[in-house]
Picture 1 (cartoon, rainbow, N blue to C red):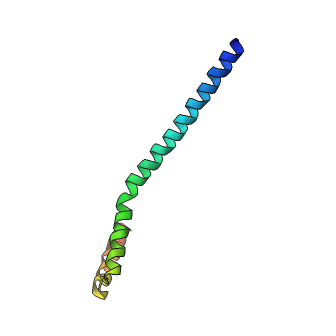
Picture 2 (cartoon, rainbow, N blue to C red; picture 1 turned 90 degrees about the horizontal axis):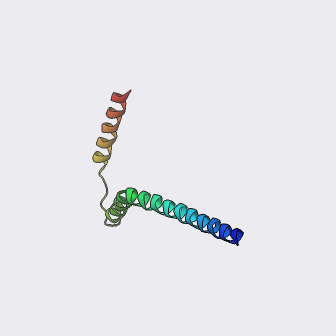
Picture 3 (tube, helix red, strand yellow; picture 1 turned 180 degrees about the vertical axis):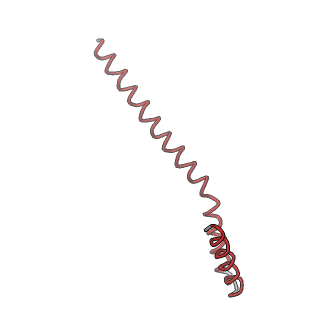
Length: 76
């Protein structure tokens, strides 16, 4: 009788541990998705702009490269 109770208690404990592990993994995944939502939305926006033929001009691309080259050289 005591062995059956002990076995039942151990089985219940293992179920609780598994539930907590799954719950923790679910929360971590939800947090990751929430934190990356902005990036997904920006990709969608960029794709919509490309589909509409809205691209940066050569001058805009050049200006952006120059800006980042200045920032990178300042960091060195």
